[in-house]
Length: 81
Image (cartoon, rainbow, N blue to C red; front, side, top):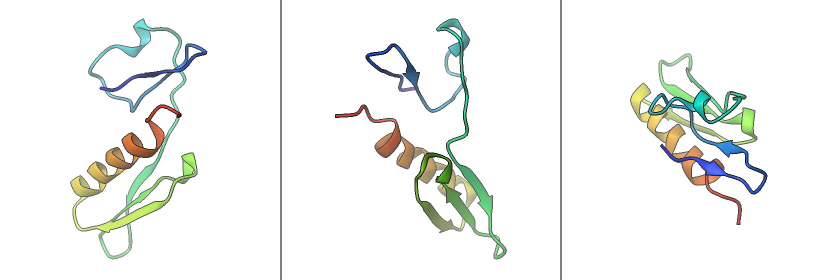
């Protein structure tokens, strides 16, 4: 689990239960995306909550979820230059 700590002391991560994040301090959890099926039974990743793109369609939900994580790690979780 990657934790990005800003100069202001804020921590950003993709939520997981690998560690108890509440032990670090007060949390504010917000949705980064939606993974939903379309009318054809394929899976779409909608990253609009963080001004990201739509990804897919994917035949398997697991592929959509991995694509979501990959995009978030590369474009949202990376520390700012």
